Length: 363
Image (cartoon, rainbow, N blue to C red; front, top):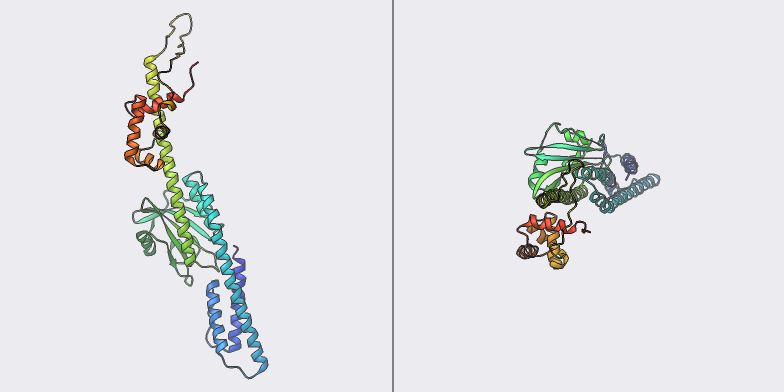
């Protein structure tokens, strides 16, 4: 949501608090709030003092004081309602944000989409994605500062004590204080005095960090910690899925290439009659082979066919077991039966036979 409404609420609270303190003749310099939660807290303190103060004995003065107290209480209530509405809006946006993250077409697209969601629907001012490297990290992406990738040879950032604790403990934390001036390079980059840092945990290790800050008069709090932690966890799940998909695709491509080479080598031995007529062009005649065995579907059971298809896809025994929800020992038994029924010596030969069976039917 736009911070304009929050700024108006803060300005109203500060103005009413100043008037109330003047009416009560409170000594001391008024604390100037920079965030909406801080303005609410200061106004509540002044209101509590006003409610406990003795009447002045003048009807007009007491009536003016009562109006100011009523105005302060109303402004506090409206500000708290704004905080609640904003928080509810952000929570309701999480599911849609994760859905859009899951639709990312690549690892880079996932990073861009996640930072876009953080600074869009989830109402952070700025977000960064960084890759952990021993005692430091490399910032890969900053949004919306230029909406561009940082060069790979950019400066390596050292982990601050808070960031190191985030990595060691594997949990998000708040860094900095909303009342202080921006301190440290990350504060300057995010344009905020405090921010949340959350770990991205892949394969039980912290591999990356998300930093996110909110725009004044908002400040990060425990709700932001939970929100960024949820998004970082969703990022890790989607990222692992993308990595598994990439590995499976590369493995499948390698197996298909090996199978095609195997089939091509076999056909080169079978060959065809080559016309060596010097007067004409040399061309191989098509070879029509009679089927050597029934179709695979007639040889294998439904479960064995499923196992064979996963073998062709490059799945290991463990991956087949996970996919079909059976034990690894059961997978091994199915694999042996498949090889025996196909007359194949190993998986590569079984893949070759499968691809050959799926090819065009000879006429």
